[in-house]
Length: 350
Image 1 (cartoon, helix red, strand yellow):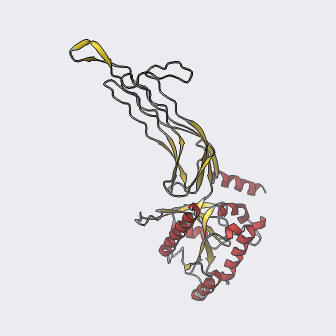
Image 2 (image 1 turned 45 degrees about the horizontal axis):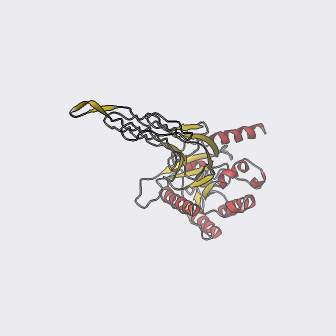
Image 3 (image 1 turned 45 degrees about the vertical axis):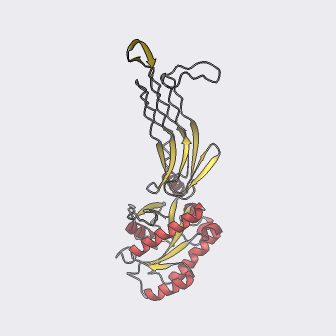
């Protein structure tokens, strides 16, 4: 029980799925109070102070390169606008401050929620304040109570609570029995730093890897987040084994990749057993789009026959073969992952 509690705490620290932060728009720049002598009338000066620049907004933006929420970041402030100057010189507007979040984050500000499923999707969290009016362009302003502000006064930015909830932890989750080779496959496909060993529960906590692609003109993602969870065993949905601790992370993945051990006696039976566990845990999880890979084909006996049986068991789902050791089939598998993630995220965004 102690070990399981420690693992749960570790997973929560790495995979924070809810974060609240305070967003504060930047203060506007001060308006300038300046005068210039008129040409030919040195004793008559005209107001010539420029207005201050606008404070910077705080914007939440989904980025494919970001794989997790940061629970340590609890306050974000926009930059201050530049002060106005003489000769009607306006201060610079501050650039927006970006809060980068993973795709699949739901951002809520003031009761308005936006699903940030697409790379670059954004939500304005806090607007920057307006710059103070220079005495050469705006005259004087009055506060709500009627009291006059000086020309140099500027507005503070908005302040708002921003609730971030990670609905989609990964684009694709790897699921399979213990020792199916999921961790080795993820390490071979991505930049994840994963330690593997020759015992059943290689993965003791969820591992997130990123499969990177060259930029494509088709609009496909240039990176796919792939999640490896502990191997599932019979009755994992009821809490047996390590896998049941992390099935909720599978629930927040857009699609699934079934990894089946090609060296096993009955890969098709193993695949059907995992399908049954997912359905028992959640019909919604079992209904996710999925593909299947027959792994370890480098050491599989009768690999062709096993692949045919697996295709028959999977019905209309795509089934490929691969080897994390030799690299066979990995390029095609990576492209299948990108297509699977693309189609699933587009369906979620609709």
